[in-house]
Length: 59
Image 1 (cartoon, one colour):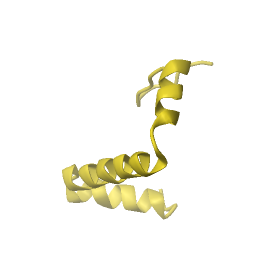
Image 2: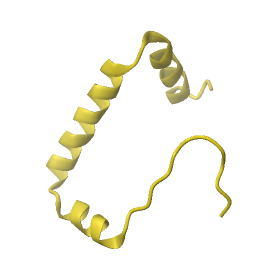
Image 3: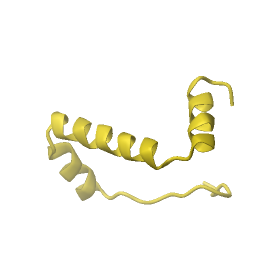
Image 4: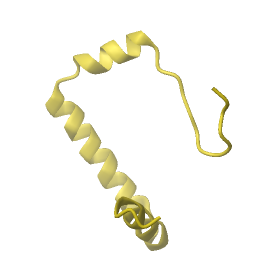
C-alpha cells in the first residue's frame, strides 16, 4: 500500500495487541476519556472548532 502524504503512522505487533487486550475494558475506557480530555484542553479554539465540524460531518 502506498503511503499517503501527511499525517503519521506506526506499527503494532501481535504482542502489543495481546497486551492491550489484557487490559480491563474499564481501564481502556478511562485511558480513552483521559486522552480525549487532554486533547480537548490542549487545543486552541480554532482547532477545536475544526474538530467539532469534522465530527458533525461538515468538513
